[in-house]
Length: 183
Image 1 (cartoon, rainbow, N blue to C red):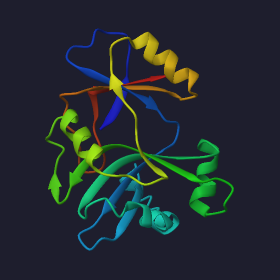
Image 2: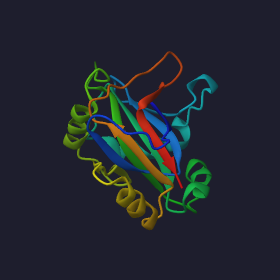
Image 3: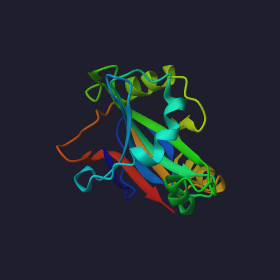
């Protein structure tokens, strides 16, 4: 799914807050045969980064085959270091923040609510440079924003815990269940 801007309206239901990482959207597909593909968000433009990121395969051995992860590609040099990671220059090291799962072990889990998908992700033992993106219950938006700003993030993403993962033919769908606040 894609977040839409948050304009201060009252949010109904249970929500979580995640830091907004200023990286590049990345989807990782581990196929039936164990081969791994790395794709950018805009699938219609075919940003296949597999050849550039296949050195990361060894860190994904705990991810079951036939799994699709939704992630944010980042680097030790911030957003500006991502091209260095893709070109393997060694100037920056990758940091990959996993925030959702769409397929798990051959099953589409997008129809499960976010709370259940987060539990699936928590069972996977990710190895550095892969990290499960931190999140917490949304109790005080102002404090969550302040905390994220102090830690140097780009903003926050608000997500409804009972939301399903909505996709279209070409990409995730923008939905009111995910809200973005950029600083």
